[in-house]
Structures are given as C-alpha cells and as structure tokens.
Image (cartoon, one colour):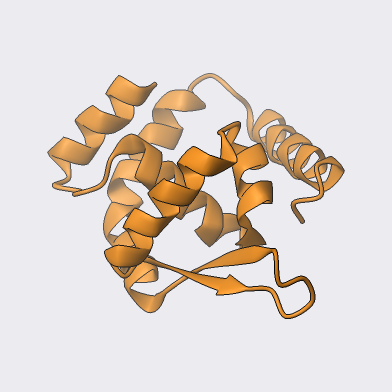
Length: 126
C-alpha cells in the first residue's frame, strides 16, 4: 500500500510522504483531534506521530494547539494551506480509493465507513 501511495504521489507531484499524506487526510476527514487519538486511528506510535505532525506544522499544513481543558493534551487541526493541499491531492486520493475499493458495492463501502467511525468512537477519537 505504501508503494502505491508513493507512486501516485510522485505521479501527481505531491511533496509528502505516504505517512504524511495519511495524517493530513485523516485530520481533514475526522476534524480536529488529539495526537493520541490520531495515533490510535493510524495505528502509529504517538512519539513518531508527534514528530511527523511537527513536520507538517513546519510546512504550514497542520497546527498544534494545547487543549484548554487539559493542558497536557495537544489537538491537531488542518490549516487553510492543508485544505489546499488536500484539494490538490484529490485526483491521487480518488485513484487510490478507486483501486482500493474495486469490487466493493456502494453498500459495502458505506458499511466500511460506518465500521471505521465506530472503531474510532470506541477508541475515543470522535
């Protein structure tokens, strides 16, 4: 899967690694979230993810903010530049999704999305 995303990224001249693309897409689709919840959603180590988010913040695509409720917690949000990057990535994302979901019915895709949302809710990410 990493090779497929890397190949599509190169073809579309997207200057992000597959891991950075996944982070950006998830924050865009799921909205502002804690780094720990994002790490769980992506099945990644929180320390590694924190470094990757810092890189995306440096590129101006994401913003980290300390939670007002829990000062130990950091929330990640997408910036306007990040939204623009997502818009530029749409052809790549569409091609990737078409390849990944080839052979699935619309009902199965809806079910898959529903399952993902339930899993994230169970993990406390929503």
